[in-house]
Picture 1 (cartoon, protein in one colour):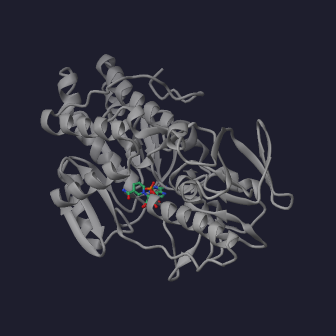
Picture 2 (cartoon, rainbow, N blue to C red):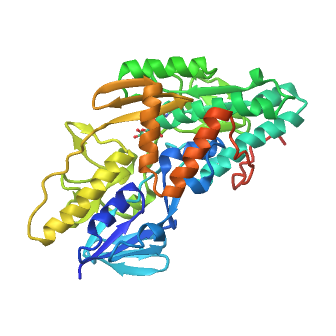
Picture 3 (cartoon, rainbow, N blue to C red):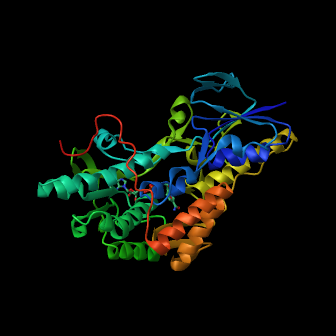
Length: 420
Ligand code: NAI
């Protein structure tokens, strides 16, 4: 029986495993978490809209009926491509085929101070830490008598106007306007500043210009200060440093300025490009190793001269492709080159507001938001999760409530960002 190892239980890894299940392979899924995380809704956990359990699904439940698929909870720290071995903290496993689908991590572009004083959003715990920081800042602000310190506590700087920054900014603005304004009658909500800083000249760079303009206008109407053509270059405790030599007093810097391939890519001496992504051939394998596939955010492949984006739809299609390519290979056929079928992209801005470009048609406002909502519910795994998420959204939409306003976990290390 051929052994297939899949590293990562994200969108790409799971799709590949599902294709291979019940087809006579011994499939081993490896991940350092025992759950599949629905990353597109992570920002809603960080802004108190959803509980963390509702966007994850236990991996053993996912694979329960997938014949031939097993799971190991472990971190992979090395791969021997010649001997076809994968090294985990708990032991070594051998493969006939390997699918690397370990996703991406935040790209701090080597700016250590931002890593130290800033917040990012990649893991479930990051969302809980960021939520705790936001709510903690309000709690500290109520007790702060120094006017400038209070202002810094109530200033939230979001760096990066991609989908992550835009969705988070909108959700934070709603949390403040509809919920925290009632929680903190001692504070003046007009003292709360949400600043979205983007280095380039527009938000949502990969979206059509019309939707970029719409997003900018809507965010500004929601009271968010958008600073375009402004780069953030570092941070100090209580201060965000801008490229032009100025700074913004703030204790909460959310870094949404980009992602890079998971650090597992470092363990491989193969061709990589910007963002540590592994260059793959059109069949998603790497040079000299037709048995090794790389899918999703870790893989770098161009289509029509443009790099494929690091998104869930790409990962899902590539995961399915890798699974099918292995099946075909075992039947003695080769696989046609991978083609990404781009159905479009979308981003939520706020209550009943989103932008979407689907099959080259632009949608904005309520129509886009309904599309966004339906698709997110559809791709979320598990009936219970869908029900809980829908209930939370309905509760939020009709009653203006975000129930999960719980301070749980501070950022680890010496980064306590509040005044001494
Ligand atoms: P991104 O790479 O799409 O955007 C980062 C933004 O940060 C860029 O606009 C860049 O110009 C800006 N930036 C970089 N360095 C900066 C600096 N020092 N100061 C100020 N601005 C700076 O990153 P994002 O939004 O995290 O998305 C990552 C990937 O995930 C993308 O492929 C995106 O399409 C995908 N994604 C898609 C979502 C959706 O479709 N709704 C949601 C979240 C992510």
